[in-house]
Image 1 (spheres, rainbow, N blue to C red):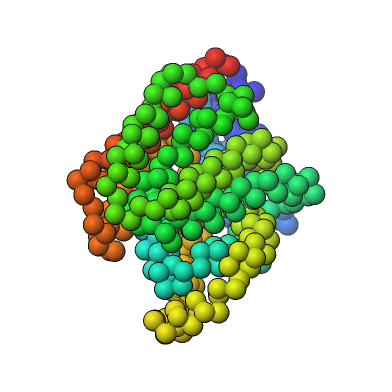
Image 2 (cartoon, helix red, strand yellow):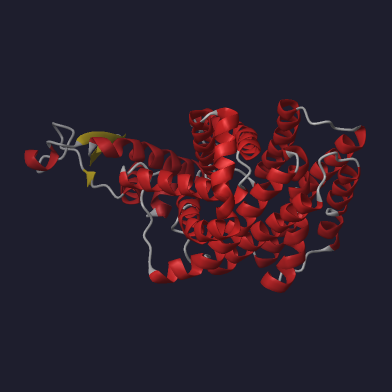
Amino acid sequence: MLRSAQSGSVTGVCRYYSAACRLPLVRPSPVLGVQANVSNRATRDLTPVYIAEGNVAWVRPAQQQVLATRQRVIVAQAGAAAGAPAPADDRAPVSSLKIGAYITMWYVFNIIFNIVNKSALNAFPCPWFISTLQLAASSLFMVLVWLLRIQPAPRLDGAFLLALLPVALFHTIGHVSACVSFSQMAVSFAHIVKAAEPVFSVALSGPLLGVVYPAYVWLSLVPIVAGCAMSAMKEVSFAWGGFNYAMVSNLGMVLRNIYSKKSLVNYKHIDGINLFGLISIVSLVYCAPAAYIMEGTQWASAWQAGCGQLGTAALVQLLAVSGLFYHLYNQASYMVLDQGISPVTFSVGNTMKRVAVVATSVMFFRNPVSAMNWIGSSIAILGTYLYSLASDKYAAEQKAKKA
């Protein structure tokens, strides 16, 4: 059938096109131009779409957009076989605008979250409570969009939930540790320390995933370590507790990613947004009792102090906005990934997002930053970008070997 389509036969192209679109091909009658023996009942709610020289496919109105999309693909395939250039994709500008809008939302939501989160921690210094609240906000958000059918609810089974448990545990560790770190140090410096996450990723991928990285990947980690060390030397807000929690957060997030690859590889039907929602729900179950054990005795006094400083309504609003933007910036990042952009493009975007967060937090909170801080931070962020390029190159090499 494909051979017939490629040979230039109109009938062959129409048959191939009809089969690929899973639509009935209708032969024209000599007079009416449509099949005479198709009953009115069969076609009264259908729309005729003309394929080529009188050949007709009947579709429901809702199928016309799908049909148009498939038509472009099939015409491009037939044209390529005949040596003709493929038609330009008129959807490209729309896709570029969509990707740009999603990246903008990702940046803006992340910047707002970091500023609001640090403000909430300053007023109510209970990072375990705030971490739990953010997971609860994300869980509630996802349950609502599932109930309202804005986002299709995932199909779950016991095996998937069992595989999700370690992933959610490490996500909880990474999230809470980051929140504790932000409560003890400047947001800008905490993000510079979190830029060292690739160091843990490369170090642990060998023993846990059996991945042996080449020398150029290891060398790309040198500027990350050097930049973090330089930045720490002159950091006014440096505290060993905050630094250690940031490093624990890096470890937790890397283990989350590694166990996602190991445990969830057979559940690719669950998209990124749904997966994040499910991780948030399970993490909430982990985090809530741990938060009460760790700092439950402090909540009453901290609440009274926070209400005295800001007022009850303002404090509640600050905590609620923190939880909302925690979910929104994570969802926006998955929406960017779902657009099918290349890993390098996403890595560049992620690097620039960290730059934007560091710069805006310094300006908003007026943190004193020395020249050594700026130089070290720049080197560390550059290192994360070089690591992204190196790891992408390694992935491409491995893919070429398997081909």
